[in-house]
Image 1: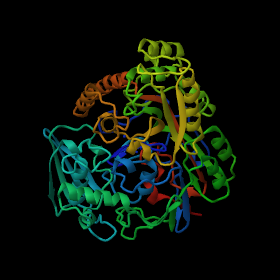
Image 2 (image 1 turned 60 degrees about the horizontal axis):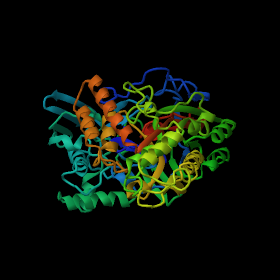
Image 3 (image 1 turned 90 degrees about the horizontal axis):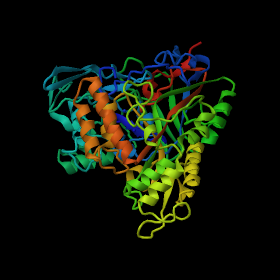
Image 4 (image 1 turned 120 degrees about the horizontal axis):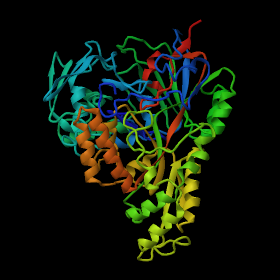
Length: 582
C-alpha cells in the first residue's frame, strides 16, 4: 500500500502510512525494527556505500543554492488525493511527499518519526482510555497563509472513519474508526483524540493531511455528501495548495510534474533547489538510457538484472541495491466466476513454482533470494515466520494441483479444464506495462497453468487502476509497506479496510487482526497476526512471492537523497535534496 501512511501499491502498489501498493518504534504491530543481517542482499557505491548500516545519514552533505533534480516515476498518476483508495499508489505518494504535511512519517530506517517541521509533539498521554495529543507548530501554515490546525486533522478523520462519510472510499479507516472524540485547544493548534478502543499503530494516523478550508470551498458542509464532494474534488484536481516544502506548478498528463519551493514553507530546512521535476517513464528499459543521457538525474525503478547492470556502468552515478517493506505477490479477484472457488485458487497456487519465478527475475542479481512466507511481515521484522511453504502453495506441485481439481469435480484436467457445469476455465493475468520482471511472472503463470488445462491471457496496466475498479482476474503487483504492520493488515485484509481488492471475506482473520490492533503486547500482536496470516494463506487468494529489492541511482553531485523502502519513498526528505556545495 502512503496516506494515513498505510501500505501503498507501487507499480508497485502502495499501502499510505497507509499501504501505497505503498504500512515501530513506539508504534504497534511489528514496530518497524529489523533484526538479522541488514546488509544481506544489499550493495552500494559511492556515497551510497554505507546506506545499509547508516540508512538515515548516508549521502549527507551541504547544498549550494539553485539547480534542479529530475526524478523518474514508473507509473502515470491516477488521481491526486492519496487518502483516496484508487490514488493511494506509490508514485502519487512520491510526488506529494513535498506537498502533503503529516504528523508522523516513515524513515529510511523503516521506522516512524515525528515530523518536527510540522509538529511540536505527538504522543499518547493516557492509556485508558487511550488519549493522543498532537501539538502543531504555531507557524505551520498552508501556502495561502491559513494555519494548519485541528480542522485539517478532523477533516481527514471524518473522510476516513467510514461513519461521517460512508461513500468517501478512503484508503484506510484503521484507527480513525476507533476514535471516540476529537477536541481542539490553543486556537486549533492542539488536537486531543480519545479512542473508544486502543489502537496499537496510532502513529500511523494523520500521515497525510488535507486543507479543510479548501474542502469547505468545494462542497464540505459537514454532511456525508458534502465531505464526499470535497474529497472527490481533491482527487480530480492537481493540488494548487501545499503544506509542505514544495508546490506543484505544472502538470503534463502522463509526462511530468513540476514542483518549485513553497514560499510559505515553515520548516527548518528551506529547499535549495530551484525546481524538482517528476518525469514519468513507464517503459522500464528506457530509464537507464534517460539517466545516461542526463534527461533525468535520479531513477528509483523496480530493478531487473539488465537495468542494474546498465546503470552501474554510467559514469558519475552512484547506486544502491537495498531491501525493505516492499513485497511482490499474485492476487486473485474472487468476483471472477471461476476464482470464487477456493479449490481452483488453491490448485493454481500449488502449481506455481515461486523458486522458478525468483530464478528468472530478481534471483539474477540478488544472490540467495528466497520465497516470502508471510502476508504481514517481511524477513528481518520481529514476528516474521514462514506460514506458506508448509502448505505447498508456490511449490510447483502440478500433480497435487491436478488431483485437487479432479477431486473437486473439474474435467479436462491437464488438457482443457472445465467446471462441473462444463464451462471452460479461463482468466487474465495483469501486470505493469513496461515491467519486464512482471511480464515474466505472468508468462510463467500462463505456461504453468496450460499444464492444468487453463487458458490464461496476459493484460497490461499503466497505473494499477484496475485494483480500485476490480477490472482484473489475477494480478501481480507489490505492496509498499510502512512500519505499521497492524494498520497495514487492517487496510488490506479487512473486507471494508480500503484495499481488499480481491474481495476475500474471512471474518475470523479480521477478528484476529482487530484483536492485534488493540494490544500493546508485541508477543500477542505477532501471534494474532500470524494466526490471521495462516487463515489468509488457507483462503488462497494472495500468494507472496518475494521481498522486493529496491534500486536507487543518482548522479553523485546530488546529496541528501537516499533509499526509503517504505510507502514514503526517497522524496520523504525532499526539502533537504540539493546540489553538492563546493
